[in-house]
Image (tube, rainbow, N blue to C red; front, side):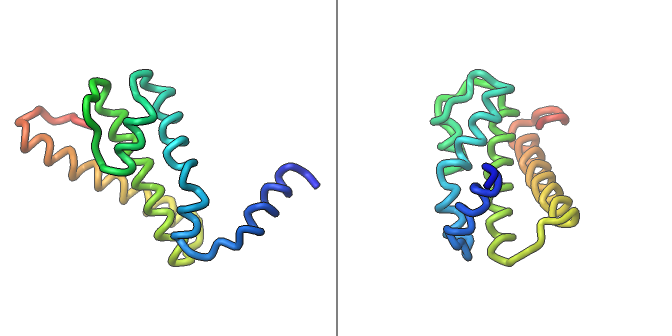
Length: 126
């Protein structure tokens, strides 16, 4: 049995049927993945910052690039979107990926507009 086949068998043994069970199985992975992804591009991000975004949708005492925070929040939103799709038994196909991208893009657009309105900042925010 190959390592891939062993990994598939391990996941099948978990018999995950709900989004809550899947979330529990992936609990540590979701934050760790987002942290390491953000760390590649921004050395100032910490695991604590990433966990705060996942758990509280914000950070305290962060002085790094704001784009990294948006990207980590996008990772959190994608995870939540995926869990909802799993619960609905949706197929992971091209239409699903496009909908996920549209969902994240529209959230970023709304956030950007709110920031521009609140701060009077010029266009072009992340």
